[in-house]
Image 1 (spheres, one colour):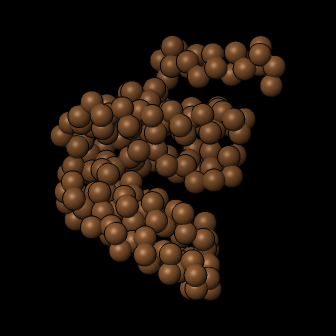
Image 2 (image 1 turned 90 degrees about the vertical axis):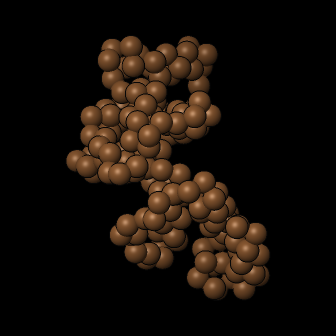
Length: 181
């Protein structure tokens, strides 16, 4: 990409926000509000997560699809207890995921919800069906840390490790999750 092309790509990251579209901050502010507030660090982690998804989309020439999805999410966030629900954005999400060729995970929900989503998405990428959780327990800091650790283990595991067709990988996976409190 030429320097001029890179400059235009960088400028496009901010152009839509300047015109009133959804921004990482506006999405994360709503998420934090549902969760009863976020620390500065939690909010920044959320904002960085949205920016990372936007960067992935732009690099895949899917910036328009990302913005349509983000605008939908920004207008569809609702609080369900201390969790976040987004309804009515399935079509823009599918369009974005089709464009980039991968699942899209905006930091919607509490830390436990996000970790569970990462686990489900990796299992799905391996063609392993897994039931969607019906109702998550309340998300304590300890449960969030443990679930995130398990999600990290799942994401680095090969599909064979998860299905048992890679015995060495399965042992590594088991070793990984045993350290998750």
